[in-house]
Length: 191
Image (cartoon, rainbow, N blue to C red; front, side, top):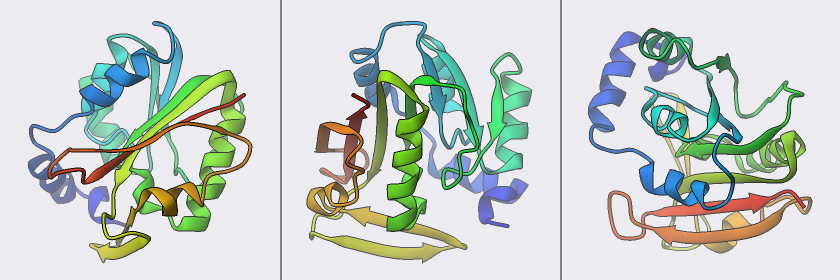
């Protein structure tokens, strides 16, 4: 059980993430796929980005935490939700895009590569992955553990070294979320 499997953890996450959402990332996704495309969000959390995604796309939310899923289901019962771990994606239905905002940094490097490869298999031809991760401006990888969760930060080169060969890199670029260029935007396409 992690911090985000408890009501106290959800309240702490809500306080930490207050005023933050992925609207700019989702605006970028809107330039890559048409409206009404099928999108899977990994790590829905409180559902902020899910609501923004639902404005344009046919979205399915997912999270590893049953507590987060219960919260989102109570607020947005019309949106399909799945309990999933990004390390294991036991799905067969295709999506036009898979999206996450600061979720995949909880995976080890090997798990990240495997997850991206599996996500690529779940994409329709021409589909895209759009993910944000924390950036390590000092180069390489930086690893932290907090409240039972792994947090990995990547430099551009370090993240690029983990990308599966089956996917085409569209973008890997720094952007600012909380501090100057503290984040990375990763966009991959299935050929």
